[in-house]
Amino acid sequence: MRHFLSTLDYTRAELELLLATARRLKAGPHAQTLGGKSIALVFFNPSLRTRTSFELGMHQLGGKAIVLEPGKGAWPIEFDEGAIMDGEPEEHVREVAQVLSRYVDAIAVRAFPKFQRWEDDREDRVIQSFAKYASVPVINMETITHPCQELALAMTLQERLGGTDGKKLLLTWTYHPRPLNTAVANSALIIAAKLGMDVTLLCPSEEYVLDRRYMEAAQGYAAAQGRSVTVSHDIASAYRGADVVYAKSWGALPYFGRWADERPMRERSRNFMVDAEKMALTPNALFSHCLPVRRNVKVSDEVLDSPRAMHIDEAENRLHVQKALLDSLLGGGTL
Ligand code: CP
Image (cartoon, protein in one colour):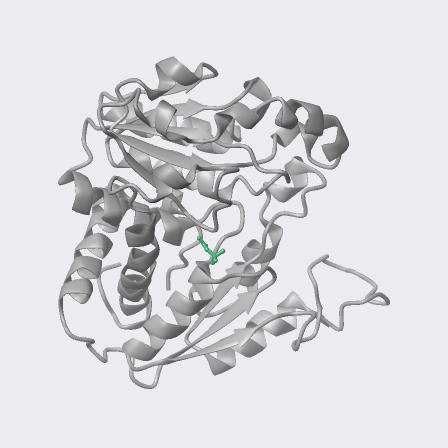
């Protein structure tokens, strides 16, 4: 049995096999390979794409998905080991994961960080606890990385670029009024490097550089393939030469739990919004974003509505890559 918690646990060859399956599923009729199988989708945070694509994907494969929202229709869950449970949670993840494992063939979890202390959040305790106590595969639907989004980005890049090796991806921080999760940024960084791209991480200052676990992994993948991972705080030079611009906003890790202190820095960086003027610095780069996106705050209308934007394709590809993943983990596929 294998979990799908992070692509750090998977080789490029394994991910390429999944992507090949996703292309086959996208091209062909719905193959009912998961008849009688089921998955619990456990959401601690809201979702449009992830919930729809997992529910629909399981249905198209002939299986069933059950959505659970702890604290809202399902009991709130305790994660502390040895906790005296006299507070809000009604049951412990030990029981939840074991009981769900008796009912379903996989458990998928979305659990964002608490945004109080990054050194705690980087332990990814919620999904790691499910993985520890479950006896069925556990799938990450976004915690501190978003590996399903990575697969969708990879599939879309391959569709639009032909191949990814040697292509330049600019991962740019964008302004957002609130500090957001670093998951998609971590994921874009590691998947682009794993796929042999040269990656530039553009952000307002050193405080916005991503966690060392993902920076070092990306640098390792890049070095092994003769590529590079570069950090830049200069907008114009970072955009020049980019084949793909990938936008995301995130909170600065050292400021977790003291966001009022981060706010002035964030407000000074509104100029990081992706717009046509910046895109004109590139050799007609493709653009994408994981969604949801705030128009004319993170990205201008002109960029989102341009034929070079591929964010809708990427969102569609969530369905195909997740079907490939489910088929593989539950149906005896490639992994
Ligand atoms: N990109 C993504 O995961 O979208 P949702 O938050 O709507 O699921």
